[in-house]
Image 1 (cartoon, rainbow, N blue to C red):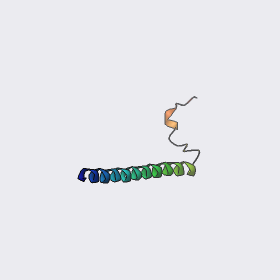
Image 2 (image 1 turned 120 degrees about the vertical axis):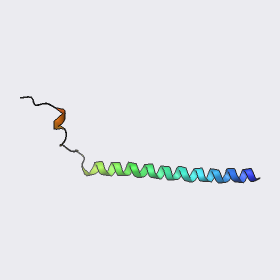
Image 3 (image 1 turned 120 degrees about the horizontal axis):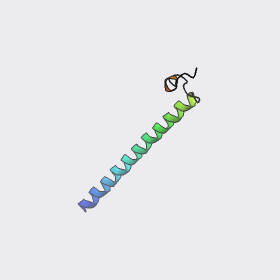
Image 4 (image 1 turned 180 degrees about the vertical axis):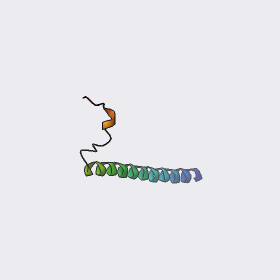
Length: 55
């Protein structure tokens, strides 16, 4: 009976841990979507170093 109670408690801990992980991933995803919506076209600066002058 003692092993069953330990297994039940462990299962509940794993479920709580999985829920916390899912919530954190959703928050990261929402943060990324929000930051992209603020400036949808992106930054123009910083790309000049990639290319050489044509003329």
